[in-house]
Amino acid sequence: MCGIVGYIGEEQAAPILLEGLSRLEYRGYDSAGVAVYGGGAMQVRKAKGRLSVLDGLLDHGKALEGVVGVGHTRWATHGAPSDVNSHPQVSRSGKIAVVHNGIIENYVQLRSFLQEQGVSFVSETDTEVVAQLVDYFYEDGRVDILEAVGRCLRRIEGAYALGILCADASDRLIAVRKDSPLILGLGEGCTFLASDVTAILRHTREVIYLDDGETAVLTREGARCYDHLMRPVEKAVSHVDWETDAAEKGGYEHFMFKEIMEQPEALRRAILPRLRGGEVVLEGFGLSDAYLRSLKKLYIVACGSSYHVGMVGKYNLERLLRIPVEAALASEFRYMDPILDEGTLVVVISQSGETLDTMAALREAKRLGARVLSIVNVVGSSIARESDEVLYTWAGPEIAVATTKAYSTQLAVLDLLGLYIARRRGSLDAGTCREVLEEMARLPEKLEQVLSRRDDIQYLASQHFSHSSVFYMGRNVDYALGLEGSLKLKEISYIHSEAYAAGELKHGTISLIEPGTLVVALGTYPPLTGKTVSNIQEVRSRGGQVLAVTTESHREDFSHAAGAVITVPDTHPMLLPSLTVAPLQLFAYYVALMRGCDVDKPRNLAKSVTVE
Image (cartoon, rainbow, N blue to C red; front, side):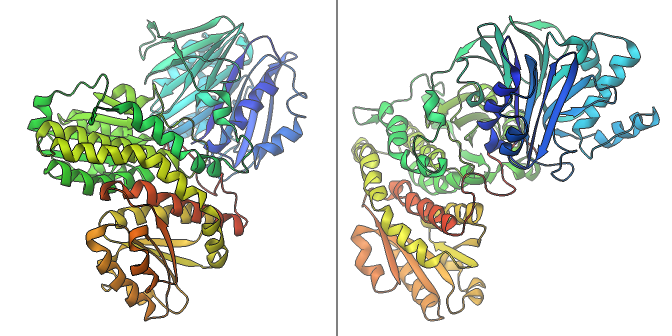
């Protein structure tokens, strides 16, 4: 959720912190702040609003001297957005500054304890408890700052990534990670900490991924890492090969539009290296054929758009594997008391690989004896490291809060996984597999055709951007895809939107259809297009406006029923969602633009959800 950056080196810290925060603003943008030690004092500057407010106050960082500091962009959890509630939070002595991503679950009890000791609080945040508690141990016990942090960690509960700066120890920074992403960057004469590698790519490509419960002490020379018992641990250094311009707009007005247009190339990276001789090849895949043949059930567990990928996958994989496939919300998975054993494969999906609910579901699945395979984008992420197997989507950095290319590549990889398992179970013959894979190889080209007709979608958005409520309906995979289309619209345009299985329309939802109501009808799944056309007639007879999305071969069927029709090229039925999602993304994007919304930073949302 929140974005954290820390720097210690030889250059002025504030400009580096602000530049790093600008690349993390998608993680939180209701307030921002920095703490820099310089001139013999801790200098803290914070401001409510977008990072640009703070940047202006600091003259792009030139106004703060000092070569060590921490910075933060906030997504509010405890306390409304304000200057006071912004991070860094500073202790009563003014010596300890803390930036924090996550939630301290027992902060109320700790706050009460500290107040009993005479500590006064100035903010509503749980983060201030950390700053004051570290200060309490540091001042009371006259211990080293690392020992004070250790004592604090033994008393706080929850999920957190922490960056800590002490005025008495300005030759170091302290980083702590538990259930919330935090990485270290190693440069020449400087060291970084950050929530995401995109924040430091301009300065270094050598990174260390902290594991849960680990603490690191950063100096100009590098980093020393410790486990949860404060025992030294050796950490591998990873090289990041992303290009820096992959995390920049590159001439596009918005990251979201850029990432929509990048989808054909992202699909090429996700699909083509895994096709060989009419079969799916998964390099380094460790699940044996015998295990795959023994599978009795498959769970797909995810949140948000990744869950919608799982909904599409449920339909496709059940047809391929002929075993039960269940899509479950990660936030519910732990609490539904799932029945799992060694005959169950749990597939968890996450763009960031750090989604807290998904991580918790993964751990619960492993505790119950299931094998876990993850589909993630970020190499070295927590979910990737804790899974039994991992398939990367290779989508490249995704900055816009509303996901686009991550959804597309997750769907492609899940389809590939289904085909791979089906061949080993004998539920799919070689000829059919080859036909599907030949069509998969053509998906990038066909998606380019869809995107080339974006002006038509922009025109339709200009006709419908003023609606206050929009419904999506479809059957089978079209219903699952409608969930994603509806989510995109509500995320960035703030229009109330819901998706329904078209067959359920008459069971209550049709009471909401009145003259002028917009319904987006998805009708790409060949066996059920006729039924969807009938549902469109039910909407039109009650005065609803219908925008239909179908394949080119069914254009005529839908043009007689709907007010307007968007088509996608024909392909194998299981692959149609990979093409159909693009018009839905574009429609949401153009509607949001016409309503004057901030497309890349929609209100109340953040990119990586690391709180429960």
